[in-house]
Image (tube, rainbow, N blue to C red; front, side, top):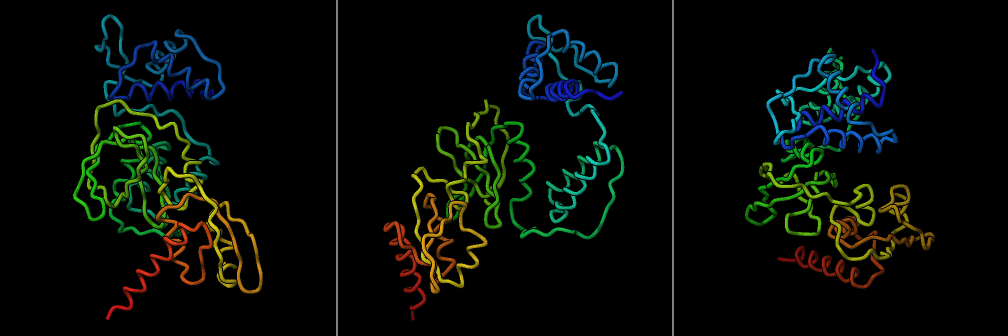
Length: 331
């Protein structure tokens, strides 16, 4: 018999709670967690009796086995006997399955990496059956399968989703290995590298850790600190992954006409604005925070791009060009 969406949501929440190895739930805790999820989904909160009935239904219809020995004082605590168990909640219809298969074809480029294996395994677990194989990928990305650190991706992603505190063993460029305790929040790719965006314990600012410089990591049993940041907007004012605490500025650039035709169709930043155009050059502005990635981007255009303002950034680029010139003029 099909399960309606509200009941399915409650079952999913209960399943997640029963599998949690780090937290123990009373019946009141389960009611609260379910109702928070229901309110977020614009559904009506339910009573303790409803959740108790849900648990009974899961035991009789799905055969879940709960540890009946766990207690806190006189209160019963709820957890699976086997926390690796998960309820087979639903099967997909053909349209839903086709969409996920399409996504897996896109991920084919990552075959052999944990993210691809995880997605393929997930579909097979949901379907409980066979996934057709096609040896040839139909989508290609700029992707380096030999990039050190990609093996950490799925474990870091899981730590973010399940809100685990981590101790990283991290080796910054040119420095000794450090052990840092962090609250992981986001994974971002830039310039063919992946970065973990996190907050270090004892600090308020956010840091980025290149995955290829993470040697290993383990979970730390301390409370997780929520970020309070919307990462869909966090990088809006920068090029790259480094987000300085400074304010964004209008960066004015003069670009040779042939090179600008490339930039016209592939803007340097969403804020790109054309200030002047003629037969020889174009002048544009972007409103961003100045960081190392912006500096590298400007230098990558060589003499086709000139920084007009702000003066401090213009001098920073000029000094880098002078240093490069001196290096190439050495005898």
